[in-house]
View 1 (spheres, rainbow, N blue to C red):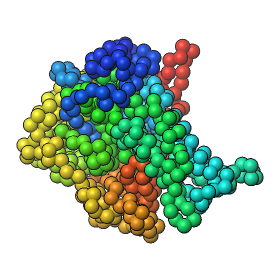
View 2 (view 1 turned 180 degrees about the horizontal axis):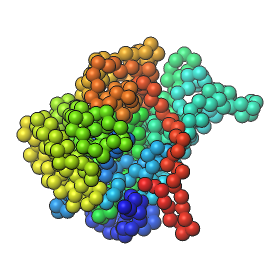
View 3 (view 1 turned 135 degrees about the horizontal axis):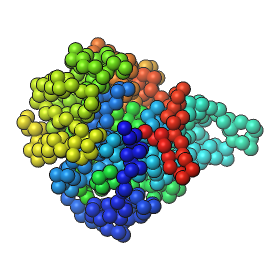
View 4 (view 1 turned 30 degrees about the vertical axis):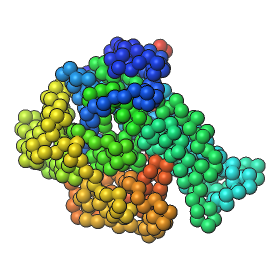
Length: 562
């Protein structure tokens, strides 16, 4: 059996100019990066009027070691829509180097449902993440230079909230002390690094609607507080102009293609467990402008990625999805039902029934909390039995939701035709209960307090009994509300493996509370981050990271990226 990278390397992509023509992109907006990737000038959205196409969100159950195939399904669905003669665009996130070399490996879809060039997308691509890291670290350098050169603003070095970033899992950098070695080397202070994709600059980059909006958002970043507890912003440090200059080209969405030649934007990549987990608004809007159907995804399970897509991205960008796809595998559901990974190949209807509540809760969240039409895509594995698939179908039908068997990993677009047909139907008609883009509602209102917003997510989406706020978190909430940040949406930082903040509680746990230990404002992004459990903004590498398997031969051919 061919690996993902071998399948990708065996295909002959179309020149990116042809893909641009297929998408209706004029040459004057195209900036090629080699033969198979390009950037598209954001002025296309300013200069041309386009009726926006249908927006399809792909999300999934809580991830397990068994795999779910959310990106694979997103790509395969787009190819299937294309096979049905639809004008379709894909909008995906770019993988972070940390997970690529860490626990996940490559992330560009899988099997015969991938975006290419797979190696480029998984590595440096067009350099966007490096630009984001440079802009972030420029602000850090300007902050420390200001303190070193007299500290005119009166910044309290004990209250600095801005961290440096690097796009790699590196636990050694979580907590550091710098500025040592005498006066010439700066002011000694505690510091630390986040991974680039967890940074506020990444969030701002993905939520910006124009270059001007980007600059204004960067200026609103809070980097720390003065001795009398007043916030200090990037604008106070005169940083936003230079930061925007570093991000000017990065803000242009990246155009690539699927294995079957469907145009795809891959742009931005915030984590969904510690950030808002969606590709850029610029890319999503461009995909909707150019395609009659735009297929996008949100990271990790629907309790994280979809919740943030709907409550943050859609709220800030004025988007309304026309249909939602929830991806699941029989294997993953059996894992949620208590079966070890080694035993997932055997039929086990009892374990499947025990794990199904995880899927059903995600489905009900989409249909009842957000009031949107939904279809379940079962990402097929060869070990799935007819009885297992029928059980999933029966349980979903009881909720008024159809199930489509997805075979896109093995068959590409051909294996997603049933799913495509159901998505087209939902986009055109809504579901039998009358749900459509026009019935969409948020999980909470803007007028609620920050505590009430967090509690709404915890109770309505996670099904928690309530929320425990650690004293430090409660104090910070009061402070942020007094500074005028209370009207912002909330970005929950939580484990991706469970509805709860305890990653060992699989399925659909009950009788638990969510513990919020820290709260911070991302004023430029426009949301408040609530950190739960032991979630961290700088991952580490495991004992046997994916990097061990990645190599290059003498011809320059890469192996091991799946």
